[in-house]
Image (cartoon, rainbow, N blue to C red; front, top):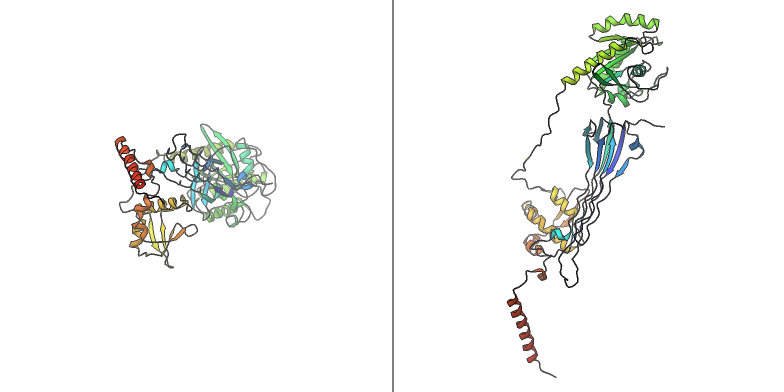
Length: 478
């Protein structure tokens, strides 16, 4: 059964925003109480958060589809809908978030680091929020926006200071088990280690993490063995340690050849040339191993490597190795630039930026793209004429009508607002521009006008009675 997963494809869907409510206040002896429809609630977000107690992506391997809750619709009495609950997905430290094309969206390092993978939709405004001096009794509300739906890829890159690399059965897991409190699976056959092992080492005042990478053999960078799956786990390390087997029973292998082969695989993988290297000659407790280590050590030191002869079984040479690793890790940490305080970058909008674009496609269709026009279309209930008129008003004020005329659009031309896979297409009529003021009067109700003075009301009632009397006097019975 799979217990360690370091790469998954995740399908995340944020919550939809709740629809706004179109309602009129009703109360005894107060039939015209005005609009009181509440706003819809916001849809929940999908948030990825680093939790250092999590070490694998196994949970998402079994359940790759995740969805946040929707916002509730608004209600009468100016009651807003409840916001959808954010769905927080915990991921291991060192998780990289990519899109389907392989572009990096976020690199989550450090406990508590978070990233909003999918944004919840906005709630629609109720008719109470849409009321204005010109539109005192809106008979419509705005729809909630759909939440984001995305396919993302999560890749785990182990966060460790030291990475042990080498052939299978070179003794990497044994070395971790004696340097730290880690208890990896250890056996005398290849590919015992099927997952990266992590251990914490304390050397003096320095505490650092150490990890081994399983399955490096010739051709690992091209997919042979397990190397390609786990080479990513050495990318974040500060130092690479070659663990070389001095007691191998394979006649065609020797420590120097093993080093050259593993270095070639690391070179083919790329991105690790600037990492300092150290060499550990392991298994010197075996008589032939001790002799071979003494034989190859001068050659390795001539190449510039710091070489340590150790035995994980006999526990010899470990103290010197642990303190040497602590020294290199401390230097690497000191060389890292200090984290700067968060800077807020303000990018003012260009004076000529209209917030949308109008383009004509090969088939003659005019396409409007922009955050505001597309959002307004998504929020419009096209079964309500008043809501459509409100949309026309907004587009006209934004300048969409004028830009269409500049682009050469004529009556009857097709206009699409939105992307190709999700657009609203209609036949454009230039008369809409001239009638924008008329459309803006939708939602007005003379009954909500300011009350007339008492004297004026008396005069109006008297005039109505006089008109009725005059009509009665002129009535001729049959």
